[in-house]
Image (cartoon, rainbow, N blue to C red; front, top):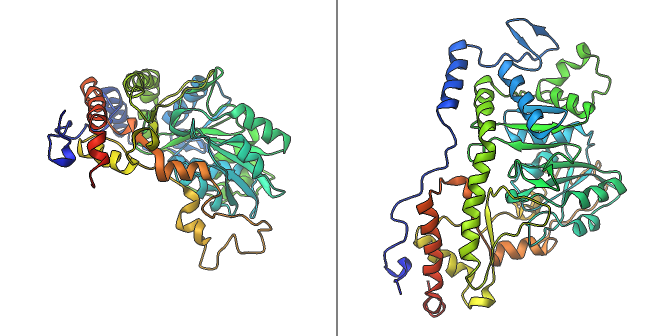
Length: 432
C-alpha cells in the first residue's frame, strides 16, 4: 500500500496539469487578419449603417459569428455580447422585468446569474436543486412562486441540462418567462433539443475556460423577434437608438456597451467549428472516470438521465461518508496532497453577504427594503437544504474545463483516488 502524500509519501502528480487551451493556429490566423484590417470593432451606437464605417449590428465577423450560431443551434436570433454576465443582464432587461419583481433562480450557479436580476432592481428567489443533476428542482420552483414572480432563471449546471420540459410546464401554467443560463452546457441536449433553445431566451458563455472561448464573451439565443430586438438595444446604447429605430416600448432601454469585438468574433467562428470534437473528448474523459471511480465505496458518479446528453464542464461527485467512515474533508485533503485537481465546494449564492445582509444599491437595503418590493423573500440557511448539504458535506468536483487532461493525466487521477481509498483505514484513525 503506497503511503499517502499527506503523510509524507510521493504524490501521484509530480507537476501541475496544463491549463485548458482550445486555441490553435486557425484562431491565431483569424485574429491576425482582423488586426491587420484595423477594424477591430465597427459597431455604431446609433441606428445607422454606414458602408465601410460600421453598423448598429456590428462588424462582419460579429454578424458572421451570429449567423453560424443560429445555424448550429437552429434558432432564429443570436446576439453576441462581450461577456455572459452582460448577456444575462440583457436577457433580464429584455423580458420587461419591473423593479420589485421576483425571479426564481438556483443557488448553485455562477454569481452573475443572480446579480443580473438584482441589476434591474428585481429580487432573486432561490429554489433548491436536485441531488442527482445539481439543477433546479421543479418541485422547489413551484413552492417558491408568489404573486410577485415574473420569471425563472434556469442554469444548466456542470453540463447536464435542467428538466426544462417540466419547468416550462410550470412557467406556462403561471405565465412566467423562462431564461436558460446554458453557460456550462453548450451542445448538450434534452430529447434532441439543444439546451437553452426551449426557453424564451437562452445563451452561452465564451469565457476563457468554457468549452469554446473568445477570451471573454457570450451569446444570447431566442426565437422571439421582440426579445431579440430588445437585447440588441440593451447591448448597444438603446436609449440613443430607440427614436431613430422607431421603438415604442422604451422600458429598460438603458444603454450599455456590451458589444463583442471583431477579434473575439473571428476567434469564435473558428472555435464553434471545434465544439463537437471538444465535447466528444470531454465525454470520453468522463466515461473513463466513471468506469473506475464508480467502483469505489461512497462515490456516486455523475448521472445522465434518459433522453439527455452531458457536455461535462464539471465532473461532479456526491460522496457518502457513511460508506467509508471518513469525512469528506479528509478525503479532499488527501486527494489534494496527491496533486489531484479536485474542489470540495461549489456555491450557495443565498448565503453570500449581499443576500444575507440584503445590501446592493447603497447602504439602506435597496431594493429589498424599499417601497418597490411588496414580497418577503428569505435567504436564511435552510431554505435550500439539498444544495446546502451537498456543499457542506458531500460534494466533490473535478473541473474538466480548467485543464487539458491528457490520457496519462486521467490515469493519474484515477490512481490518486484509488490510492486514497486504499488508505481509508489510516485516514479514519489519523487527524489531518
